[in-house]
Length: 463
Image (cartoon, rainbow, N blue to C red; front, side, top):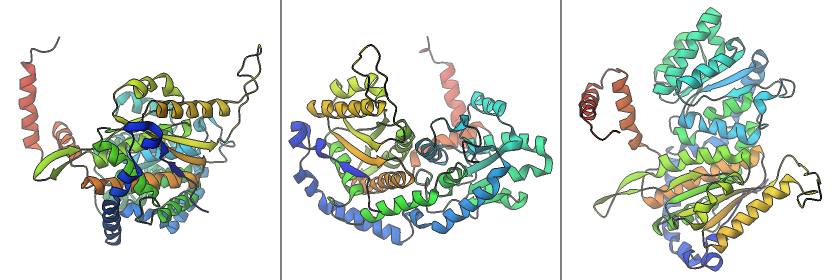
């Protein structure tokens, strides 16, 4: 199978949108940097630093996960992912893209024996108590996901649900838990050994937001009947398609280059707008991937500067009635990526009533017309937009799309001269949370918090 997920960047060029466009010459001028980026990425991959690039080739792991899903699915009705951020968004994106839009409302026969999926990706007490209200834990399998094995949100929800399992099932509670964590260290790995839990590994060289094609995302996908081997095959196809250092032959490098050029043309907002409800979860996943990878402080010319495009999610045609006015006439600070689907899984006819012009058309035609109209309107208004096209939504095309965006993130990170694989800006918030919750070793942070609280008590600026 050849790559069939394509990028059309014509509506980012001066020839199509006028003076606010970029030129082919602008892209060519970045070729030396792209070649350097490609070499750096390949060197890091060879040293085992970029584990996400290894995941498409883990066929043996995919078979192991599929075997576990086939063996265990008949014992349960529900599958719950206990995770947050990169341990949840990929799972949601795969489920939304590749399963029935109302999957959890189908009966087990209609789901062909596969499980309902719930991903409570927060510690909101109303969310968790609501989930407990509707779940029969005796018929539920829980997948606890934390690479470090110490993530506060994950551990809190795990302890709550584990306690319920122990009360309901006694010593058999451990048959209802799968752990996905680091191979050798962390609280969860220790728990796996001590309590004899089924477990899978998060590769040490794969960060959370790049982990959707690892056991982090593949396990829940397999338990809901998604063909994870085809998913990995799609990613392999895209990996091979991105092997050239020629920017015009490498879709990941090209996507990164267009976004990078527009960033320095004062367009730091990167909108992803799928014309498919099934792909909306991917836009949400992309927000974390782009934001956490690229929002960084960097030393440039002996001066610290802050870089990073801001990802925004939108949905066509819904947000034509919400955000499009801003995109058309608001600040010239956005680049819009339209996700386009050639063929939907269903065709829905609009009945002819009272001779209305919509009669005898289909919802498929209407949504495609909305997409084409938006693309044309944005282009006529000189608003840069590119289209990533999927001929259909399938495990192969979703695998291609996910890998394309992950590799594009690596490329633009190289262009920005930043580390796209760390997240130092997240650490302070984690440490302050630990301090507030009484974790040992964070006494200094707690004293700082108390000082700040005292200051706020004297705050006169609350009305």
